[in-house]
Image (cartoon, rainbow, N blue to C red; front, side, top):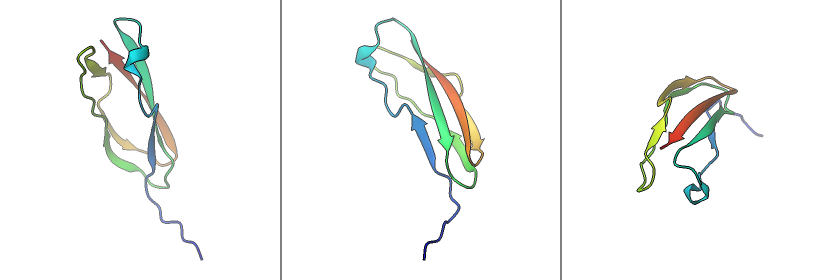
Length: 79
């Protein structure tokens, strides 16, 4: 038999950003966080590392709890 255990299942789209394809000095990328799980994901946060070319500035860095079956868009600036 099969049992479904409630657990948060969070994905982030896009999974990566190809900085080599960015042509402007600044760009905004919207990251979509989706919780496919049956319970909330607790204390969700995003962490980014600056590159030689860009400083990464998330406009929301502390998401907090992401409810079950929900989606949140986090805009991130590359400057």
